[in-house]
Length: 313
Image 1: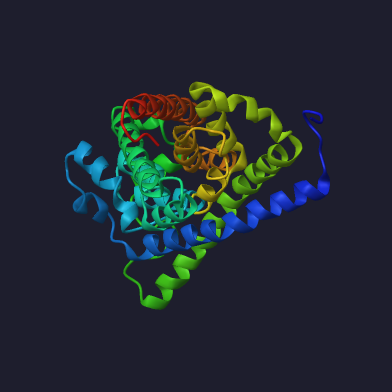
Image 2: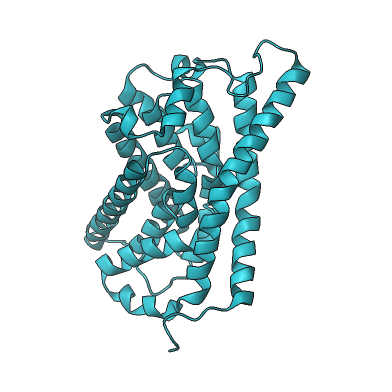
């Protein structure tokens, strides 16, 4: 086995461009949707559509990805715009965490990637765990003071729930489309800075750190689960393609792969930078630690339950 850290600029460049080219289209899609929401979604419509009960609203928000599927790279600007239109932060964060997992595109890709490895069970468990975790976080956020969750600039946007671009929502279709384009460009440039920084760090970890060091961890359920969650956070692979990577970890137990598939779309290096554009740093730190512990406990407990069944994964 070679050294622990060996930097190669050609390898770094390929990995960096791969993450960039994979994620930027989804970030662009998210900012386009955010611009259209800004100009065409009537203010406070989301609060009227969702159940008034905040807990039921969080549950419904966790399922919105089935109708509005989003990649983790593009969902943050969308929820930022939705909050400015009246969506409660707890519901927005539930949707943000669940949509990259609980959607038909990810279900199909996961099933295809795990052919021959109990694909239906893995797909159901992935979507189910992702939904449950997102809703639990939504419940927790509902009980937090909003000033401890959102940055001051986002709080100001919520306090004035109108079109953030300054264009009148009553204008013609042409002016609305132009306003949507301005919002899209502004959101894309703002989010892209965080995305590029995160992609650079992820590419460095992915190419410079010797991957063989993770293999001895596969023999212990706790270590296997924690190590694959850590690996998911540094690889920063899109949720629509990460299952094809997870399926190759044949030495690891299936529940560790599930942890990889649930934690990665919720927390990775590029996402932490993107989250910084909307949420307070202390909240992001608590979110990362909480998700790591919660997903780890659920997956290890699932391994215990499956070990007592006649047909474990």
